[in-house]
Length: 214
Image (cartoon, rainbow, N blue to C red; front, side):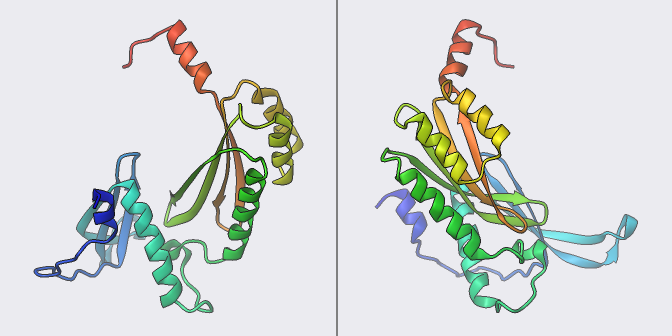
């Protein structure tokens, strides 16, 4: 059994665990770790009427574990909170977003890339924004050597890329090594995003004019 498999299905030992209830939290993150701070709201208020919170627990997670936690919490909330009950957006994410919208758009993007008939990479992630966690992010990566340029341009048209951005995409496509086609949840909708990566150009620039790292 691998370490990852052990992490996915651990045998819990609850002995000695003390329950702590939190009604306030903050989330901070870097590429290496996600930090969650939990606390209890105080009846006192600070400057400008801000609520005060006493922190009592700090949890540090790897991005891999935090992603799994976000998905688990989303499933639990869907089961625990009736659909007709109004939920403050800062606690559960954007309540006004139709879940079927982002699912349909994700399926459309996957279908368009599959129709290219080439290998592609898949990355699922989440995004932290002030007061909320947006769990539904999807990125598909295609090597530009494997796909015909016109097919990639056509995908951009299919997902509604504006004309000016489409012109710029076509102009720079020949220089790029990878095309990233993504979609992410926002407050009231789901937004397609397209990225061009220029790794060979960056590496060549580093070889031609190396600079010390500071």
